[in-house]
Image (cartoon, rainbow, N blue to C red):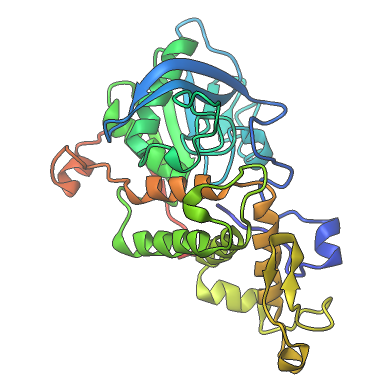
Length: 352
């Protein structure tokens, strides 16, 4: 996920918040630009079978007569399928765009476990006679490979005979790579941006820190909460942690320069929106500085809770952690070497 937020997170930021690529999103199927199809069943790698599987997706362009101009875009961890909302500069009509919707039939599919329309913890569980949500009973993990297999079902449903390219950044890069490994004869080329072939232990550790922050939050209750009123403090803390990983330490230092938050007179003792009380005694914090970077992270944490669900966040981080393109296929270097697609790999040095 690429972060482009303004440095100041007070009034001016609220007037011109260009950073969160999902600024106007809410939980559920996007109001415009997305469709949903339901498949009777889908069996996950873990052996669990989902019933009445909802798959949310967005399409751009038109399928050609030979049905071989498909392009799959994998979205990032917390995005939805509506590509033009977060990758508008990459995609459009004409060859000046990296993804030409005048020539290609572009499909982006929301991931299993995500709160934006595909079957997830915030979708009703068909196994429950009372019509209850999946919540903490959602099967886990849903792997990157599961998502690729489910997306292939959707592409078959849409009539796509071949993919010109699979492309994505971050989690979407993992998806694109898995497309090449799972269906090597179906995909012509890969564009892999800021991703990996398997999640390393360091990244798994960060995921566990984020999950534990969610689970330690007040009201988590083992994931058994009312999805219309989810616990927010732990989710905000997880997002704050994640935001730091989207930039390298030097990038953070250069951006904030140890500046104090110019639009906050004193250090906040509570964050009412997410039900967090940080300090009871005002005298104890009266002389503490409140840095701009702290203000920025709190702002981002609070804003994230308006558009995401804690159970979904936990599930998606487990999807990341279980990603291994070589699983069941042989030695990792050999599996990567076996992928003979025309491939562009883009690395980013400004994050960790």
